[in-house]
Length: 168
Image (cartoon, rainbow, N blue to C red; front, side):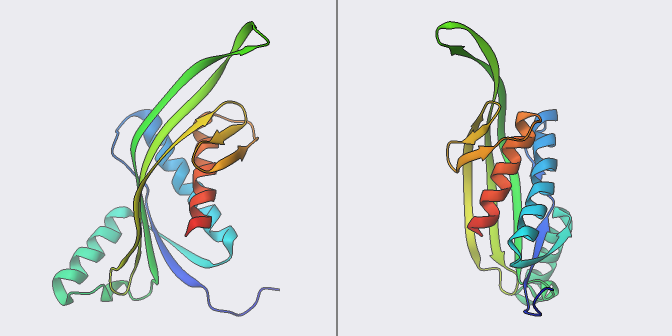
């Protein structure tokens, strides 16, 4: 059974894509899904999904009416993210100097903003850039990766989401 303690309510806006390519749209979609899953798994938050436009609209409306984020009073925190850069490539990895095998790599940049919903105080605002390599995607910023099968974007976004959830 779960304890009856009150969890903070976090509004997760849709992860936006400012690159506008098929891979970056895929990355934004996967990051949103994995981030929701990772935040729930921390058991520290009740996660409420909102579109990024809904959050932007509520914030704009609240700030213009009262100077605070009163219309977001049902939320304790807001989290928004935007994919600002993404490069997927293939590199050849040599094995004992004998030929090589192709290995997917991914470089991604994500703007993250985490703030208190009650007054808009920014707790975290940063751009996180990371690189993921190979079958066992390993993050150069966050460390050890995941070994599940799938494309490099899925693996990279899963690592990114899990580490971001822990950071928050």
